[in-house]
Image (cartoon, rainbow, N blue to C red):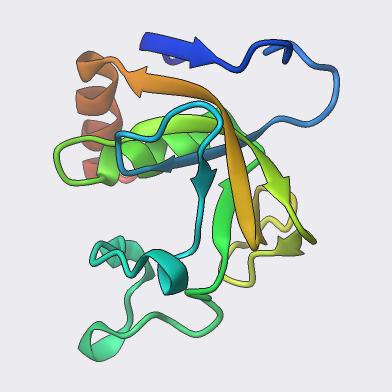
Length: 142
């Protein structure tokens, strides 16, 4: 399991809930209670190259009007580690309908929603970022 360098949680929400936890790995700096909004709203210039097709356009199936969440912490940690300079991992509550990510082979791993509220913030430990990136270079995920 990856270790967190620091964490912050929304009061009243347990991090050991028996229901499914949803995670998002991305740009650092979000706070508990804030919303993660899709790139079509935020106009963020950063899109992971893993999602880019020819000529810098998003690959088929990737939607700029959705926030992508994962059901596994490790998957979100991978995306956080790939963020330039290192991103953070957020436990989130998706809002709106959840849709399968058409770009993911496992329909239960990655889902898309209109927005998600941050309920916990986890900064990756620098050693975990290095380990994740080395694993990716060697053909693994985490």
